[in-house]
Length: 609
Image 1 (cartoon, rainbow, N blue to C red):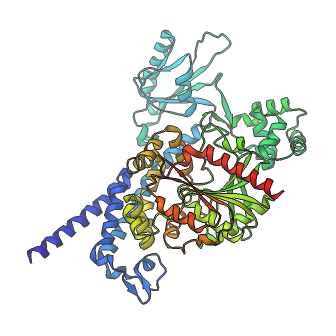
Image 2 (image 1 turned 180 degrees about the horizontal axis):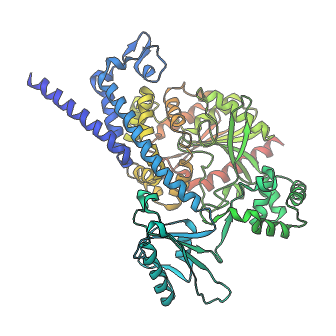
């Protein structure tokens, strides 16, 4: 009897710990691995480990809303967890709504062409917009001195602080601004400072200590044009807007044609139309009109990282036959060998593997990377299957007027690549699979898989609704701090992947891609993981095209045995084992992969001749 009572007490204590953890994880996303573990353990306890059936429907179908009745009423513990997860999500949404309001204000302030710095009575910097932050870093006349606003000239600094003290003590009915010209070594540069007292009741909790807003006029800071509103001002089409953006950046018309994959005559025609709408006669006049006319109000401070053309090629969209939008990006050479890249489960159209060098361009490859449905800007497709993705992909290639192409599948993307190879070998020249194959192909794989992946796969497969709630609870926190998720992965994988994840450029590349995974919520990711563990396995023996598998010998996600089995089933399959490499070997071997693909294509082309 005592043993039974102890078990009940332990179970009750575990349940209370789980409920407490749910609310902690709502505000502290770094706790998500422990919450995941506790949810997984909950489903493994005796009363949930066995599948409960309602007629012919298993429990996980009922939880996902597919069964005619809900067996949750028979499982009060699980029902209680659902209720607390839902309540925690509501609380989290309110917290993030307040934070988003704060971020929206700062986003708007970042668009004004002056520096804004909020300071307390003693000059301590409380907040600033992006141009204000840039001026504090680069300006020769205004500085951040131990987190206090200061002017380089001692006399002027004393005058500024006197005004700050005066305005900090201003009464509500006497809130007038004060201004002063700032002396600089260059007599032609006379930046102006305007100081305004703040209404304390209107400030957010983030800035309650701020007393004075300091506005600084910009002089010689590099700016980047925000062109989204130019269409309204000059009635420009989207294609003309792209031309203007490149012209303002100093790119010549011939190079614009290469960048946008259009003919030089097309660019010239569009430029003539732009000149007519903007009422100018030549390129220099266009630049001057854009930078000094009404569009000059659309400036925002320049951040070199965010405007790197290598990392931010222009997004493209097509409309599929069923009306859905499919978004994609292109990298590499405009008229090179076309290659469709099927991204990983944590990837998107942003997935690329070379931060500083466009190896696809060097190799003469035109790399096309679409967002799968529900990822990034592609419309969701709740009934997505590998077969439907094959149809989406072919429609994309048809729209691009590409008859034959090669395909790369990275990790989970390998399944989608294989579907293309099986269904249309006439159009797919060759296939490359990188770190691909089901990580849970056999029961033994569950024991070898990393705990984080195994628990998520099991929850997504058997309790998808519970897993969805878990992701909704933590997704915003992880979205705000993606580096934490990457750091966490680095601590739980093999040494070779760990070393790669310590490299800043790899972290940057993964963050760029990961941010698009949850852009439309968590459903696409959950469905992707569930499909990966439930959909009928690929029949590799039906793949009749040349296929090369690249696989790290030390991969923690997909075992080398699995890769070898796949290779043995593909009639024209080869396996390239990379020593001293893990699942993420693509980040260090991408140049070799893309060059090898191009060399094989050239050899095949010679044989066909």
